[in-house]
Amino acid sequence: MIRKNTVLTLLLLLGLTSSFAQPVPGLDENIPHLVTFGSDGDVAWGDDSFCQIIFFKIPESYSDPIYLHVFDPDVGGTIDEQKGKWDTQMSYSVFGGKGAWSEKDAQNMVMDGNYDSGTLLASKEFGEVSKYDGKWYTFGPFNPSEGELRSEFGGYVFKIIIEGISGDDGNLYNLYLSNHADRNHDVEGASAFYYKYKFRLHDDIHEVAHIYPHIDEKVVSIKQTNFDWDNDGRIQIVSLARLGDELMAISGDSKWVSSTHKIYEDEKTNSLDLQMIKNQSGNIKSNNVVIYLENQYGEKLPFFSIPIGEFKYQSEIGFEGF
Image 1: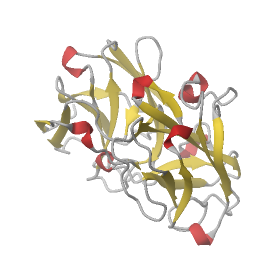
Image 2: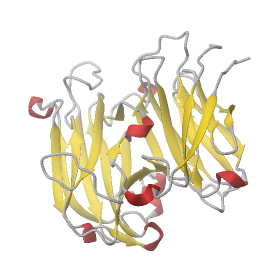
Image 3: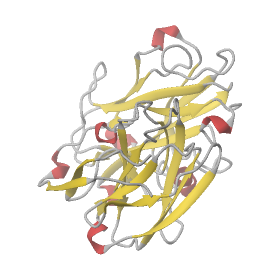
């Protein structure tokens, strides 16, 4: 049996929506990098479709220009994952306009469908380019009104698609939505969200990563599905109703696995904190993983780069038992 020693502190945050940070992965997530492989990549290396889709929402009242910064956009050098020689080309495309978010193929990442919906605002391809190794590249400026206006988000939604178009190397990178062209600075009230998340886990067994699915008032159960976790530790659920004693299933090498979990009333209109705790006796490095959640109707649920709702969770995790 897995033994845990979890001390949970729930802090009520008033006025949480006043200012959000927009790095992806988010600071609260404690995830090193996003990951996307070239189109000829081996799925056993932790990417099932060689594409990642990230959405950003901007308040309708916000009118200043915005920029999307990409850290280490090239494929080669410092942080990327090499397989043979560097031969990968990666495409970054920013979309706004009608359908950018509302097209279901984009939310579900249907790769033979209309996932690249909306109006193309900017696009660039990168291979191995030392100029951008460990550096930032800027897309923009964009007028917030170039996004898709959606009342359910109270503003405009943009989409960036990162897609491997050739090669088999792994591209590791980070994103930041900013209101400055030459530095990262928060766009007040904005946030990032995603429906299928692909990222690199820490190598350090003492680092705990988090993801924050938002649970609306209609959700009664969730089904989580993950890929290529390499049996690296555990995923535990922390919320107003759970103290980390309920675990989600994790997959093996190049495998998919799912588990279903009830949603309690206290969890609705808030975020869950899914805490990813590495195997304390393992030595698993460079672990790339995929995860998504669905409600009882099979609709994908969004993860936000920060917890959305009244409460934020802080916990001290005991690591014994592996």
